[in-house]
Length: 320
Image 1 (tube, rainbow, N blue to C red):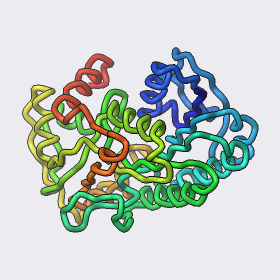
Image 2: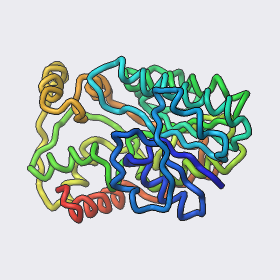
Image 3: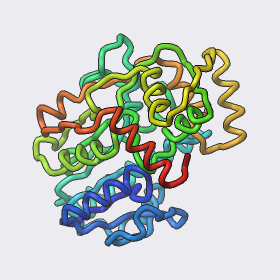
Image 4: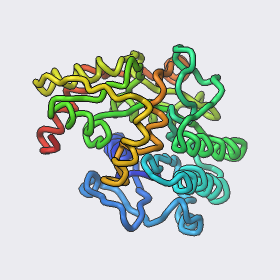
């Protein structure tokens, strides 16, 4: 079985490549010239150069793959234009090229995000029939990516996945919270609720959806099945790091000002004005019941184990 992975050099993509190879897939990674291959450079796979935002760069190599896993995307930017250029038009470029060059593909998997639907407005975990109402430019661009994929569902078999916050070894977003807590503090945004998913469970969900015919044409939320408060997450990290961290209350009205300063320090950091639009909402929660019922998705890692393993990896690799 031949698989193409976009976003293979990233956090989730590198874990997916490892599991695909372990299962005997012949893996090819689409990467840009500027991509760093640190996590996958020693794996038995093939690289092809291309960029989803440049349609012409995709046309020469798409015809021989059984599975295409589209994970490439822009998660942090100061520019709404860049979000839509990469996450919306880039996705449409790829799925259109696949439909034209490889209509016999067994599955096209698009890894979207809970952000494409937005937060729960009534405190009930979101299911797939919820009306999308993204609140950030990132979320809006991922929703446009979903719509691009669905335009071709009558031409090729597609599946869309919407994970919540994903964490684990190699993740640099959750690392920011670990680093703050190690210094003895964390930002208190008030009572907030989150769904989470450990990266290994996401990879299993991706492969289940690719290999199960029931997933064709469907969209699924994936999460570990629990709902966590921000305080619970912070306290668990504190426990694993053996520190006592104190909450620092951040009034929501000063968040944009704080984010603007953060952008000047690091334009690619997790704290930016677009991400702050998400932080203003309190219920980022979803229900993976449909994935459990239709494709047998049963996550194995809860927050306690996942944070422990993530903390251990950060320590071993001197990220903390």
